[in-house]
Amino acid sequence: MNNKEEQILVRITGQDRPGLTASVMGILAKYNAQILDIGQADIHSTLSLGILIRIDEMHSGQVMKELLFKATELGVNIGFSPVADDEYEAWVGRQGKNRYILTIIGRTLSARQIEAATKVIAGQGLNIDSILRLTGRMSIKNPAEHVRACIQFSLRGTPRDRSQMQAELMRLSSVMEIDFSLQKDDMYRRMRRLICFDMDSTLIQTECIDELAVRAGVGDQVKAITESAMRGEIDFKESFTRRVGLLKGLDVSVMQEIAENLPITEGADRLMAVLKRCGYKIAILSGGFTFFGEYLQRRYGIDYVYANELEIDDDGKLTGRYVGEIVDGHRKAELLKLIAQVEKVNLAQTIAVGDGANDLPMLSEAGLGIAFHAKPRVVANAKQSINTIGLDGVLYFLGFKDSYLGEQGKL
Image (cartoon, rainbow, N blue to C red):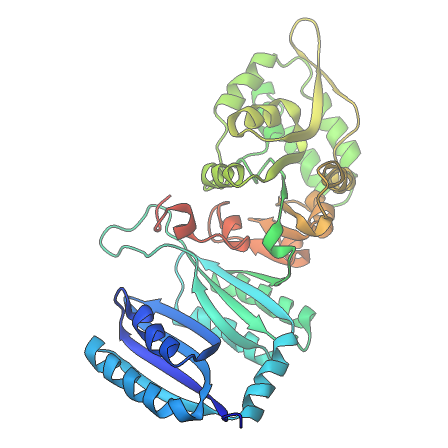
C-alpha cells in the first residue's frame, strides 16, 4: 500500500551564514523530500528562506524535529505550515497567468514613492511575486557622485486596464520624480539585441546645429526657425533646409572643434561599455549630422550611424546644402526596421532611445521605446521614460543588476 504524502511549507529567518541551505537540504535529502518550490531573499545579511516540500506523512514529524534542532544550532528561526492538496493545486493553476516586470528608478527611493507604485499594482489586481534591488548598496558616509536607486517588481496576473495602469504610472513619474518601465515578462524582454539612439540631447547634451549656428553668427535666426517648426508652422524638412542654408561658408574645422568638445550625457560612457561587452548591436539614428555621429562611432565602437550629411566644398567650407535623404522621424523608424532585418533581430528584441517628437515613430516601432529627458509630448506618448537619472538608467530597464557588472553603486 502506498504511503500518503503531504505538503509542508518551511520558513526560515535570521542571520545568514555560509552552509545554512546545505544543512537544511541535507536533512530533507535524508528523508527523500521532494522540493515543490523554493525562494530566498537576503536583506542586510538577514535571511528569509521558504521551501515547500512534499514528503511521506510517516517521516514528516521526524523531519520537522530535525529541522527544529538544526535551526536552534544555527541560531535561526523556523516555522512550519501544512499546505492542503486543494490549496496547492489552486497555486499551480495560477502559474499560467501573465507576468510583468515593473522597474522603478530614482535618485533615491522613499516609502512614499514605493507606496504610490504598489497602490497602482494592487488597483490593477496584480500580485507581487518578488522584489529585487538592481542598484548597488548606497553609502551614507561616502555617497556616489551620481547616486541612483532602482528596484524591480515581478508581477503576476493581467492588469484590469493596462493603458490606464501605464497612464497612472506616467502621472506618478511626473509628480514624484521617479521613472517607470512596465514590460511583459516574456522571452523577448530577456533577449534584447539591438539598441538605436537619437544623438542630439540624448547621447550628447546639446543640439549640434545650434552649436554650428552660434559659430556662424546666425544663432538667433536658427532658433527662430526651430521654434516655428515646433509650433507646426513649417514642417521638419523645410525647417532643416532653411537652417542648414544659414550655415553656408562655415569652415569645417569648426565642426572638428565642436566634436572634440561634445558634452557627453551622464551615464553614456558606462552604458556604451556595458552594451559592447554584452554583444549588443548599437546604432545612432539622428536628425543631426554624420560628422558628429561618426565621431561618437569611433569613440564607442558604434555599429551603425545614419544622420544628415552636410555638403562641403573644395575649400573645406559648408555650402549651405545637405547630401542625400533627410533623416526625419519616419526615416528613423524605417532604419530601425532595416537594421533589425540585416542583423536578423526580431523587432520585439529592439530598443529605441530618444527625446524629440521625431523620435516617436521609432520609439513606437521598437520592442522597448524609452523617452529620455524628453519633451512633454514625447513623454505623454511613450510607454517608458527616464527623467531622473543618466542614460545608464537604460541598463535597469534591460534588467541589469550592478552586481552583475562587478559594481556596487559606483560609476
